[in-house]
Image (tube, rainbow, N blue to C red; front, side):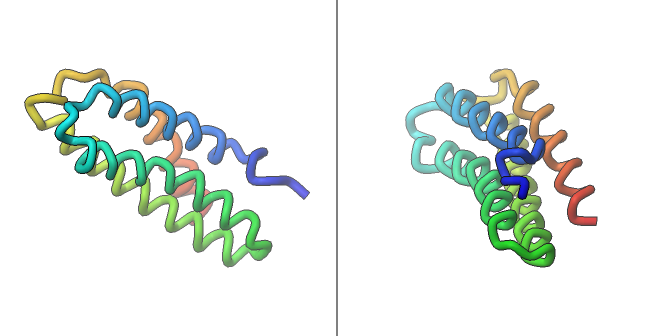
Length: 113
């Protein structure tokens, strides 16, 4: 049996979570309980739901948890868009996070179709 760790989408989402942690380390300290915390939770939720769904054992449960991971990705996408518009975070480099998120979202979309 393949484990969730063998899934490319899980591996990429782990990289995405790491990137979001690195990116949000550059956010102003007053955002630690706001946008920083929200973005980190959303990013961590993606691979967490992929893993949980895979370990549930049924295809239906796996698909349900992939949908939850996809929704967390949409939440993260929204939070990134907001942070790009804020004066203190707009000039940060979002290229890696944008690219990884786009890749993960495409994979999740394909897996849930």
